[in-house]
Length: 376
Figure (cartoon, rainbow, N blue to C red):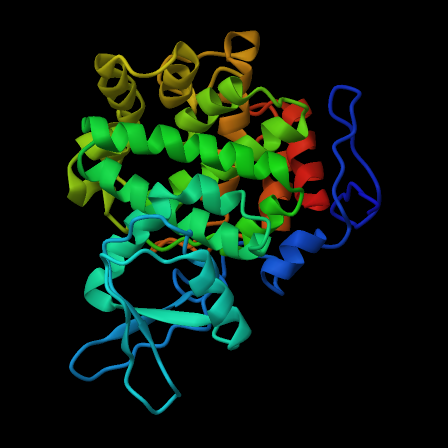
């Protein structure tokens, strides 16, 4: 794909510190696939939490049911929910496997031979189903029989569940362990298949902003580091944990302030800015995170020219992983639909970052981010 840097007149132009920052004249293919107007996160049928399974069908009656793909079931893994099958569209689901009975390879083969794609779980067991998926996510993401886009949908929704629980109880050792496992699984998933990023981008949502924003920033940050050649899992996990938890300090603020859907007063803005230090102090006290992870949580709003917060760091004083997260966090914020502002189209957000905040971000990393989106 040819990348072209555009000036206001549409011609090739501009250079920052002797290094061109390239844009595609058209929307990158991955962005155009995500949504025809170039905005990431406008969900298609595959992006809804259960829509990757044959569409979100809820069958009402004595119970309500949700379809799940048979490929999402891990052979011989313990499941704490009953499985149902539906003989035809007009029939009510009937019990197929009780929760105490393992789902075997023979079961999967018979269903495949019979052309059965979906089984069903009751709505009341949906949470148990997602805990099952999370517990088996590593094996699911390595399953060569499952389509990558199905894996991406499962991984993305699991990420939302983990972040939601973590924000509810950020000091929970169980939630911390879940977040660390999730980041490692996500890093390995992005490494194992070049299509993983584009499929995860298709799943991106901006409902429940604080949670989905954290997941999106984690995905973009991991992908950007890998794009720049970082393959070491330990390093990627330190980055991914910081990106996933970069806003965890907001859990310590007044919920009404965090959920406020208007323009902040100067006083409210100062209160919100405190989330960086609050998050750093919270995680540091737990003793479970590396200095790199902690620096991302504290410094993701620092700017290359020293105008950021909380410490006014600049240039080489900002860790390289922090620079990555600063770019991905800003991009996702600009392209997110919020109650008080329209989401920017991805191309427009990148252009704004290039034109209006060039001294605030590391342009070498920014160039990598733009190219990564174009190649996804």
